[in-house]
Length: 207
Image 1 (spheres, helix red, strand yellow):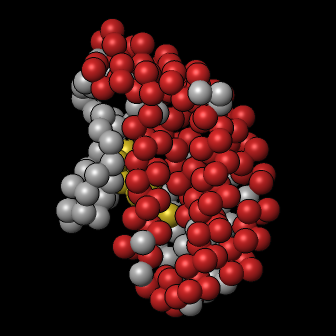
Image 2 (cartoon, helix red, strand yellow; image 1 turned 180 degrees about the horizontal axis):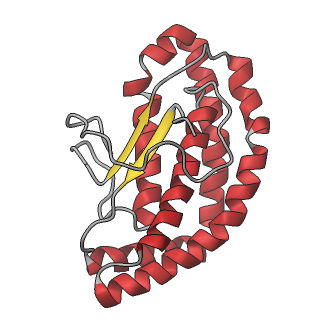
């Protein structure tokens, strides 16, 4: 399968910080107690990204929007996807401006976006959102199992890690599409291309 225009890669840490894992469990519990805050965050994000893209395209024009995407939309998506990876135990640290080789998100912009297309993608993305919502139940259970295993032995099986990595990768491709950074409709798949980690990005360009 050919590599999609947006790629997410992650390599499992040799050991996890148990304190960081406990902190993530606490974060998820707090958000759940707050009346389904996780669901609201998902909803706002999937509506907000294409709306923000439409606003930026209308203000900058399609060419400038794409040209400046690395320092605007792509950068913001790196933080969102980095937070996903952190909560799913793919990484042991939150996204920041420093070089991070464990988790990577890169986009090769394609197409000529328009305001209408950006808003239309809210509708076109619905099949993906439904499937990811269902897969999210499984991902949540596996993340809990992974957290318990990390607390016991500081690592968890590659099979669980691969599923969670594919789940976040699916999100990453969809968000890039909804941000009008990639013109091609994202595949209904966990993985595309090579799982090998690409060369490290310069500082500030990675999650």
